[in-house]
Length: 154
Length: 100
Image (tube, rainbow over all chains, first blue to last red; front, side, top):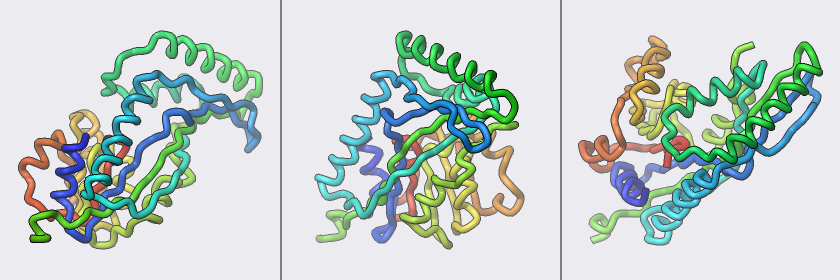
C-alpha cells in the first residue's frame, strides 16, 4: 500500500492531488423503508478482516504523510446508500460488485447477516407494497496534495 | 424496481467539494464498472480508469457513452504494472476509489 502511494505521488504533477475514498467498516447499516418512513435499521455485522484491511490502508496513508510525501489538505464523510426492492435483489447486487473479494469467509458473521437479512425481508413483506431496503456504507474522502519530490528540491 | 446506487449523489458531491475536474488529466485506480467515473468524466480533459478485474472493466466499456469514448480509457491492468509503464508528473488528479 505504501509503495502504491509512493508511485501515485510520482505520477502526480506537483500541483495535482490525490483523492482517497475508503469506507468505515463499523458504519454499515441495513434499513427497511416505506414512503419515506423508516421501518427498521440495524448495523450489519462486519468481518474482522475488513477492519484489518481498512486499518492497514489508514496506516499506509499516515505513513506517507509522516514521511512528507503528501499533505492532507481536507477531508469529509458521506453516506453511500444502495436501494433495492428486496433483500435478495440487494444481496445479489452486492455479491456481483464484490465478486472479486478474495478476503477469507467469516462463517459466524455470515450467519449473523443471514438472520438479519431474513428479519428485514419479513418486515418488508409485512409492510406490503412500496417497501424498499437500503444498504448504507459510510465513507471518508480525503484530498492529499503531493509534496515536492526530493530531486526537485535539490 | 431496479437497484439504485447513491441516488442522492452524496459521493460526487463530496468529490466535487474537494477537487475540480474541469480539463484535468485524471487517473482513477479501482474504477470497477465505472460507477464513479461517469460522475466526473464529462468535466475532465482525459481519464484513465484502471481496475485489476477484467469483468468490471468489460462492464465499464459496455456502458461508455459515445461522447465520452474519446475522453475516457478503461484499462484492465494492476496499478503496479500501470505505474511501472508510466512517466512521472503525468496526472492532475488521482482517485483511489475504495481501493487502497
